[in-house]
Image (cartoon, rainbow, N blue to C red; front, side):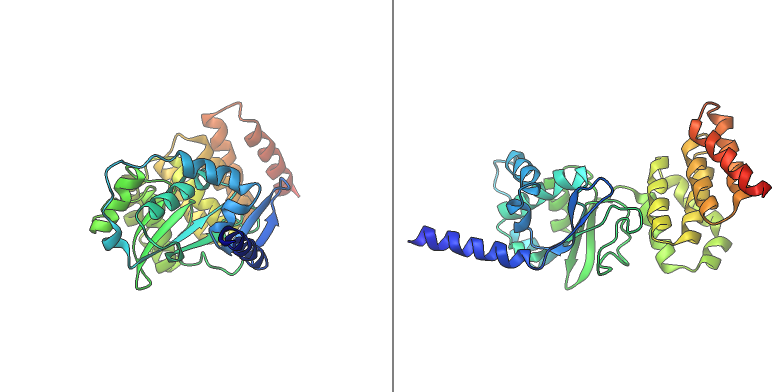
Length: 296
């Protein structure tokens, strides 16, 4: 009788949750979550449950008892993710398992799924992502009394147990993508005029923090697709100075310039791509397209 009652309760909860959960179909026609949802849905859905259960069950925790509960019992974690994202599929189930193992309450976890389509890239239906400087997912934001005090960006810096232990002890590791994190925060706190005036200061800082061209490139596209054109242009331009011999950074800057209607500057960027990579087919086609636009 007790087991039957439990099954009935689970079925009721699943049904009631389904009334509030939002979905969308991406360009590939795949169904994904968007907006806030309960973590239990990941284990109930016929598609999401496959990767959730696999990564939850396969994640091996230390045999030694983990003693972090008292340090984290007043912590809440906002988890921004994409059900379309491989890193989400890997790290979110593992994080949930660690949280469960620590004996912490799941209702201290808040899950927000983001879009991956062109027009709404890494945004949420109700703007939950605003002000969070999200350029990579999953993002785990640790909060105490609604104030952020640590975060894990995309994946742990060391390993998940170590990173969470350091956060519990008050000595969090610096998250991945320091350059992008830094520049995104600048964009959210400074005016465009101030940034342009002090661009050399930001460049010098980014020389130390940005270690790979894809770091600012991804941020640039998040800004571009979020219609923050001026910030995106600054981001892509800085990346061409940081990684002068990478053809992709000029390609991305050219794309942003073209979208902004600056066809002549965009043309120069694609010509720069060919200087570095003479057989680049995409650059050649864009040059022809831009030349036709300019000549009219």
